[in-house]
Image (cartoon, rainbow, N blue to C red; front, top):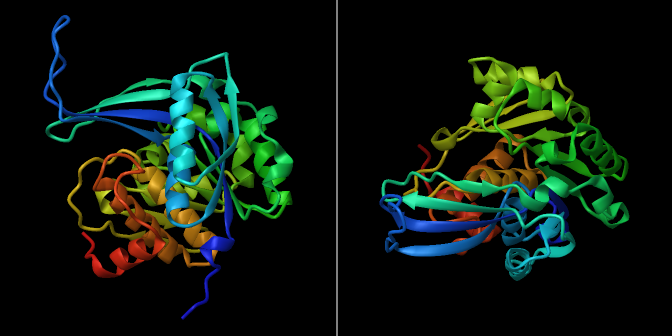
Length: 317
């Protein structure tokens, strides 16, 4: 059996988008005028391409340092408290009076649909100057969720700094796939070991209709590996040398919010441990399956041992 780095020895920096999600469960319709409607539950949870990933990484046993911007408001108090409760080091989060804490309201309909209202808030004010770069010393990996908010030049500087300090790096873009967005973050791509998009982003970024072709086009931007989530199909991992497909696990899906962040966490952790690309993608899919069975990345109870056991015992689609 291959020896893997102990998770307890890994410190990972989760940088970028931090959001407080409010799930409203059991929405049958939007009431007319000022009418009201009873729902099953209303639940708050940390979310976003940095915060959501941080929660899952912490649950899987890594030491996680979160870096981002939140408002000096009750929403920010709640988001910080929930991250702290999950064991995430929140000392890298800055508070700002310039904008409210980023938040989403997600009405989950009885058929599973989940439209959303979103406020960008403090994520739009986050800059490279907000990051105390020396505190990255000792981290094994830096994950940048939402490089578009920093901008490509600043994101590139951050990732280059991390690389020079011996960290591996990853990027997860929050915005929909668009060639203009790819150009906007282009300076960051050569410093990313892993790009973690979804299938729609890959096709949108590249204008292709084939996922493997699109992933290979993204490799030409300088990233080392493209690991693509494909919803219920699983994941596709593409490097200059190989194409790997990993199927999703069969579970009863409650809500897919945060599944992409959970995949990122599992994949990142697997690679930091020294697992193969295929095994890391499988761990990512297994982490995503845990999240899909609840509401938000902090739903339910799981750790690395239970996720590994789940992956070994649960059939794929």
